[in-house]
Image 1 (cartoon, rainbow, N blue to C red):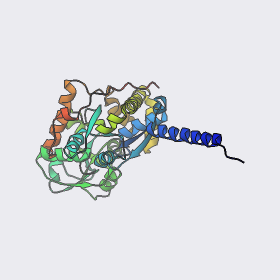
Image 2: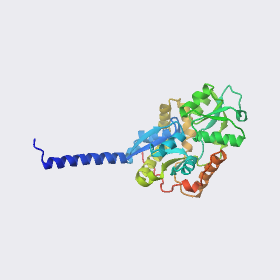
Image 3: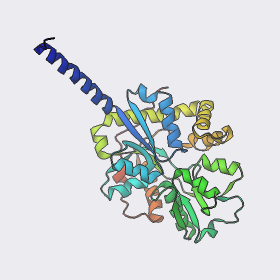
Length: 323
């Protein structure tokens, strides 16, 4: 067969279409970083995927679960994740180290379901933890922040042992640590089973503050603002879906984390229903609540934290995707 100029041009045109299509597809994919598996941000992101809310926004989402908040933040800093859910204090600490990111949307005004726990057979109280070992997910994570806050608030010193999100409960139950900072629904599960007991309920003891938010690097926001907006729309659409569909949400939590339905229901009522539905970062109240989070981190020992105004982005307001 004789190859003509027409054939060459047609081939080049076809290749161009394929390459352009692939590039567009890549540009419309957001990589979402989640701090650990059995945790509400994962539930929300999974709901968005299963309800096809990202698809309704015309984008794709790739979910990656890490071992803790610090590892999640590092992944974003390294360019391995685009939008993450994390402790807001990490954003301030990161900027002082050259990792320029901002809090795009308010996710939680407290540490719902987070508890400091010991084995049920243990006689230890909070003040008895001096010199003991307390499990956290990772250094710089939300669990680490709460452990540091406990030390400062109770005027005690203990050893913080990073074991990853999946290692908190196994290490506590095995007796490898004396206590653990446990998030829900795991905290609800081991309390209900009688394996562990709560000696400090962070949701009640820690003053309300902007504890967690959806975060992205400044450069990513600058380069892909529409993709960021669509991502937030889908995530907050997922939260609204969960709030409107209790039975389906409890079932999903049960299946995702292989826990009893009654524990999933506790997670739904005590965590999911308390999350922020608006997400807006605009207004003096938000700045005040974020500053409280940073002040808490400073009190716990985190250093070189700038003011809240440095890490707030008011560029986005989530418009929940309709389900």
